[in-house]
Length: 489
Image (tube, rainbow, N blue to C red; front, side, top):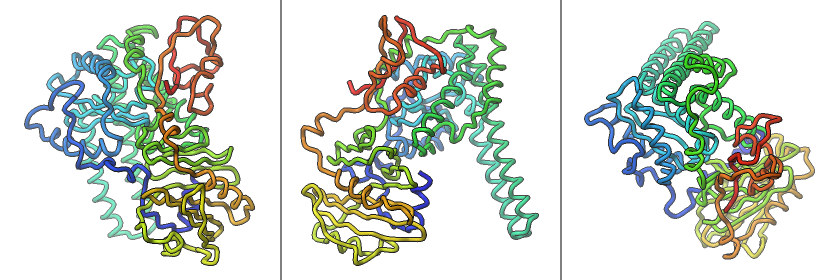
């Protein structure tokens, strides 16, 4: 995806609409969200708590960023049980906590000052027992207990002031650059120390609550495997994931194991796996209908009622900014939409100035699968572009394909992508279902290969099955084991 970003940046394509999600009626707006009236742990935070007031003000923005609140009473009860066990051994028994499950496929958890805790359904789908969920939540509780949020705000303010002083006095000299680098390293080290401190507090709480204290190290390894899987798959929009803000190193895992050994050897404490698996059975996996679905090399949006595909070898990434795809030969595709007056021609729209390097003579009107369309080509720096604009119903969609200037494949790829665009039939829309995590019991004769083959809607099934079930290379399953698969049933 780096190629895609660079290519379209060079082209200076002034994209006026950021995401397909924002095209929907009733799309997520910050003002439409209020703090949850269904908190898992407590009904409200401590009265007259200034930190809680600050956190409450941020709550709607967090909901808007992470797709809102995920409502599932069964899942909420499972998480509430974990949180309840942790609060009995909290280092600050007067602290009230309010936890929200976020409707996001990203693997993340975080805390705000004042006791607001957040955990995504994506993280719950990756975990494998209650002790791992306890380890994550206890870590975030540790940040609250240690007032890390306020401490970081104070240090960032100090570093900001120091940066301004250095810049004003020393300008852009080598001495100034060295001072600024030292400031950044100091802040990074501070963040790392915060994470390690929260690890220590969290593992202590997990062990004292009777959970497996080794769960923290185990889940750190699962998240590392998940990150590697995403990287190989080509999905690079990990800005909302846990590891984007929580450093993960072998040394951190080793330190977590050292803290756990204070409670005994591996095997101590409860994992409460069956209760956890019952809680996550049926949880939504991946994107929602509001965001559209990626099924292999096909993108389908049931709410907008449209679909298109990319050639084999391309990897689609349905990010918050747009639907993008990267392919061989440094080729890339971007899809989004724009509101346009019905009376305005698509050829005029292409010529309206939002495409740098446009070849005016290439602009022409077409019809694509019964839909009014216009196509054009452009060049900028060392890149060439195909621009396709399609009107479907009340919406106008844009497909932008980029390739290096030396490539001879642009035209064929662009025509294949735009030619695949069509409006979904009522039958096609009805057949689209979200993916879910299902817990199944291994039957005699089944193995990792046959179980992973049962999964639908995902690529690299065997690798993903191992990641979801925390199975190391060479690990096997036995009849009677419970495992997670992904299906649309």
